[in-house]
Length: 547
Image (cartoon, rainbow, N blue to C red; front, side, top):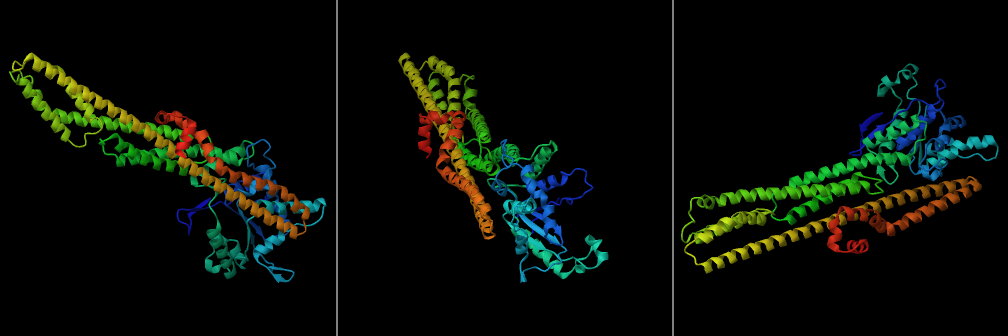
């Protein structure tokens, strides 16, 4: 394996996988070559098959491995998956490049010059006849045509005519190579650099380095156990690991953004929840970007649960910071009052009036303090409650007041306390409403982003299916032109099935919403109980609201 930065595509790495030569008679296990061939197909986005001298009957016979691929690879995990339609394989097989080294023939057919690609296509033409030998000779040709609709051929002259140099070619200087060979090599490299696509799994899942390693481990483990590698199982196994990592990435992003944006304590709960909504939206986007095949929404639900917990932690921290800040400010503002009480400053005739004046000054000063946070009123209420007995004692011992005046003052204090309790309760109710609204936004954002992701996946699958159908039509046309009408007719059934799949994929657009609502909606209603409480109706009403 040789990994180098792609020479022309930023953020891409060119991974060159070189296998040992095939067809070595000294190898102990005859299946060894077949598995190497299958692994190369499974891992690559462009498959380069290297042969010598010419593409003739013998060279095609050596391509027997391609005829075994359907026995060595499964696309689906169902028990009857062996013998799947070639369209299933063509959908994920790599592009095919046949390179012919030390080519000595002229590129001509019937005296007319042809290109290297035309040379390959001419070699892949089927022979007519029903004899078993003819059928056997046609088999690798048919498989290459079916499994590799995108094909390319390059021919190479000898690198040098110096026999002594050929034995140590890796040590040769570029100036020692034949100009024609250098031009051919440059053309080949240019094609690979410009045309080779990123390795992509079904649904447009691009394979990065970590994914490539995981896929390779899965395939080799399966082969070593004596089983057949299954693309669907490998992708699902990969999804488990990748989706767990996607949840972690999304969570880390949310926490990092919240820590960066939140200045404790926030003036209101809504200020904090607005920041949460923004950061949560970004976190869900991170999850959607890095996750795939989360068909049961298990990992998305896990993320919702974690972000709800993290949000609650930030709300709790916000409240704690507010309490701590407000208590510190009140302690400072009430220092004179608290020192005066034990000194008997207010235990004199007219002392209650002095006490009330000092208390009101504290309250007025406290209200002027900025950024007290969400617990400002609650901390003040607790402070006033802690002074209630002292205030009652000062009131009752003040000889400057009549009994009637004392009763009126006591009633006034009760009214003020009741009013503050009422305001505090109203604030708590408002905050509860805000929390439930935040949960509704969480619900909507998850559903909306999942809807978008599913629609993008649907379009990608549709694009893949239409490409396969287009390739099938081209192959059918070739068979007709070559006179293989029966084989062309056989392809009609495959294309009918493919067209049905395309129609099914197109119709999925109208059912995406109901699918999401059914699978994800119910789970989110459990995870986000505030949604149902806030709206007061079930899933149907919720669907109407979000739509």
